Length: 132
Image (tube, rainbow, N blue to C red; front, side, top):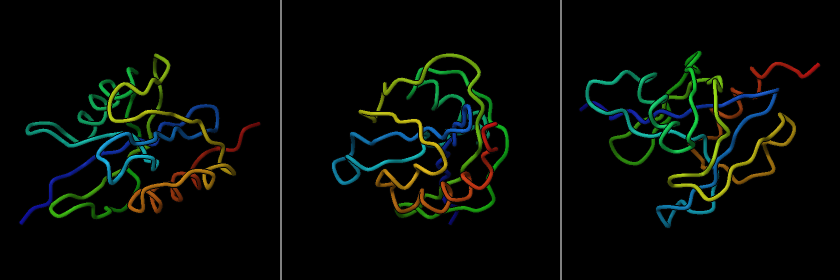
């Protein structure tokens, strides 16, 4: 059986990573994640990610590089993560989130990440270029 893919974006800007706090469903509310969502039929992971970030955050983005790895979610779903460049707009918590926070690499442990996002966040932090 094939797993359905959920994509998440590591939105990086000025050496910081965007974290989004879940507002739903209740078992995930209050915990933090990389924003994204399910890949729809006929979409590539990159297309789904750009669409999801537009819907959830109101921004235009470009998917850059897929982080190696796939992390199991609830039954039948697997998480793929890309680094993402912000092209235009200011991220707002429009869907499924009630707060956003920009975190410098040394601040990422200040929020309670969903368990499946932790390995991807750790890998993304290793890739964030140091600010001059």
